[in-house]
Image (tube, rainbow, N blue to C red; front, side):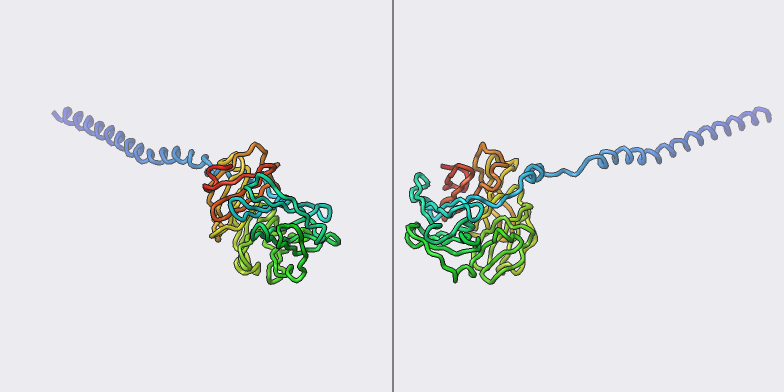
Length: 308
């Protein structure tokens, strides 16, 4: 009898040890499972790069050049335009249209005012236009005006100090109505002027800066990729950009006074973005937007949705 009891006890102990071993293995497996899952899940997170908008690298390939085209619109039918370049070899020959660009009247400012290489157009009407150019003799900044639709021009030396401009000989300096000031970058390509205190500067590296105190101080930079030119607009600045993925041509953007960009229109063009750099300008009136891109001039009365 004792023999049977001993055998039974031995079997019971053996079963207990087997069960204990199995239980220990299950606990170990459950404890290790989360670590295995966590390791696998971490691999794709580590290997997946942060998404980058494609518009930025596409547009950054094109940097702005000093504009060779100047444009100032008066209304839906009336505008002035001009071509600029080196001083003194580029004559100042502003053109006027009063029929929406169908025909243009060429005028001569170089002859009567000895001005060349126009830098800014400030238009008031078909009769009155003010300009900043460079003198024919020494390429110094000069203020010129006509009251008679370009039939004659006169120089006004006393007005140049109160004008906004960037002298091509020193693009690291901006002249405002209060005098010369350090530019926000090494090379300002163009200025868009709203009033005596407010303007935006487009730099050669594509950054845009704004000032609200006549260039005494400048805002933090804003990058609106592909911007080639700026113009003053109600509430901010109008920008023309090329090389963006959203528009096969010239992309129109509105920049707030704080330089936040908002795309709103596209002008289709077959010209390459590189050829449009330096050859795009834009201007707007209360009801019409004018765009001069390469050899094409167009107008839009619906915010850039359609062009004629």
